[in-house]
Length: 463
Ligand SMILES: [Zn+2]
Picture 1 (spheres, rainbow, N blue to C red):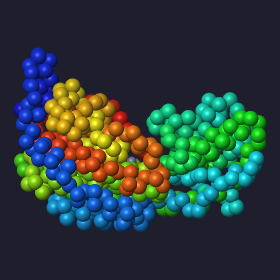
Picture 2 (picture 1 turned 135 degrees about the vertical axis):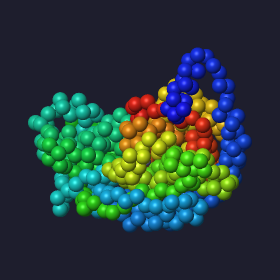
Picture 3 (picture 1 turned 180 degrees about the vertical axis):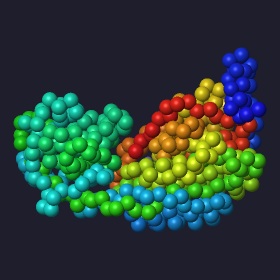
Picture 4 (picture 1 turned 90 degrees about the horizontal axis):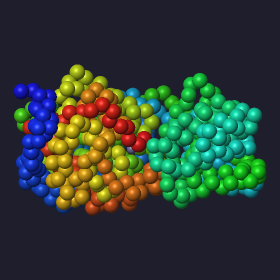
């Protein structure tokens, strides 16, 4: 009987009203409790995260920090007793920020809280000085048209309505403004919290438009300038950015595993991204996630637990400004993709875990709910629709069932892509619970008799 058939027959039995009760729940309860107890008592994981955040720091693609983190990760996976530890090579974009600043010079002189957007070009030497045109939406931009925008700096003062719908201003705002002759773009940071902190992040140019420099400003600075402009007060800004993009750099994904005891060729992969922005420490995004995944597998090793299939931890590179690590991993898997039983991605910080989202069929959802019950004792058993994030996108597109590890996410976008994404934001107890959730889900998926069946359309997570 093929595994595909077993999943189908499971659907049939559910449809026929046959109750499986809590098969997987009972089968894995003892192992799950061991993994949860070990996770909640673990000190080593947080100490590894401390090293990554405080001794290595942020890890933008192309930076020495990233390469240091990769070398350290290889050593750390080996020290954790993982097998087949290796780096999967990937060429990554090499953007450097350079010196940058912005000042409002009229109606008063004030330093603006800014961060250039990743992949932006710099300003010409000496910077750009121009009047500011403020809009709240792309629709307003279109209404103003070239007459009002030509030669100006466009400020997007878009209100935060959730990350997905707000980040589009950051990602595409510069080229949309350039289409009307703007000389630079400023974007209100994509965050629900106004604390005079700018949030960087990736932007992309539309090759059909002239490239103009783009920077994020704090919500407060955006609101102030937009309010002045709305009152008819001319606002002038001087912007200087030394950003540039160098030739692609050599880098790579780091992987390590516990080979399966019965089906080593079948793989459950779980991980997050090792790169971060060049500010803060990449603690919540995404250092805590990769170390929680590593430590979840390290604890299996310590407890002498070897699932039937291979359980692999992956630190994908370049999630933030290119996604080359996810693509390199997909190429590494090659035509053995059918052997990828599941992929779990964690890229939403390590606040209190809630559970997992999955892009799988109804019978598979039931299996996940049975596993989820094992995590109810730490409040992490909720199974919802959705899927994983961008690192496992290339796997999900080719049919691998994708899961996203979900947390409360209460403050994630307060810190995201800022100087404030530092270790102190990662609560050690929440971190350990995330580790427990990953350990239990990862182990059960790698060991259970059946396999998940993907449905199309697993979603992309934050970038
Ligand atoms: Zn991330």
